[in-house]
Image (tube, rainbow, N blue to C red; front, side, top):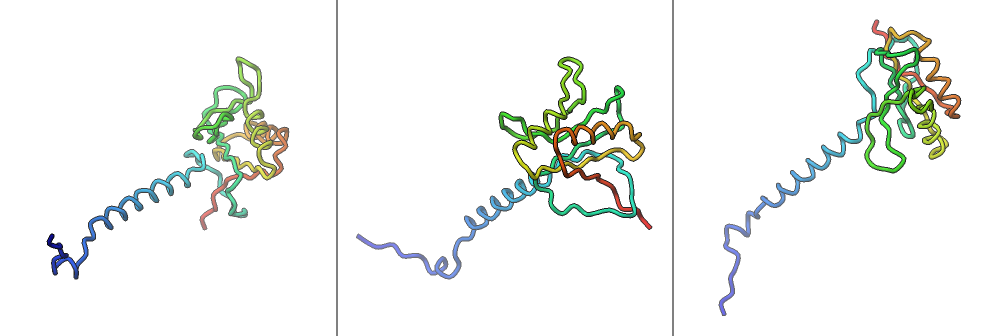
Length: 160
C-alpha cells in the first residue's frame, strides 16, 4: 500500500482557516460577556451635579435604585435590576413603597432579601436632579428599615 505524504506546498504554509474560526468564536464570546458585565441597572436619569464627591470603585454587592421624576402618587416608584428569589436572570423591576393591592412595601421586602443574602450589601440611589426631596426621603428610610448601612448617592461632577 502506498503512503500519502503531505505535498510540499502545505508543509511550509499551514492551513490557518480553523484558527481564524476559533478566534472569531472567542471574540464573540468575550463581547457577550463584556456586555453582560456592564449592566448595573442604571436608567437614563438627569442626575444632580456636585463639586465634592467620592468615586465608588467597588460595585460588588450593590443594588442601584432609580427614582424617576414620573410620579403617579405621593410615594415614588423605584426601579432596580432585581434577580427573583427563585433564581433566573435579573431584570428591571418596579418596586412600590406601598402596594395598593397587598399593602406591602415591595422595596422593603426586596432590600431585606438582599441584605439577608449578603452582609456587605450596598445601595446606590439615583434620582432626577429636579426631584423634590420628599420623594427621596421615603426610599432612604426604607433602606434604613431594611438594615442597609451603606447608602450612596449617584451624582455627576460639576464642570468648570
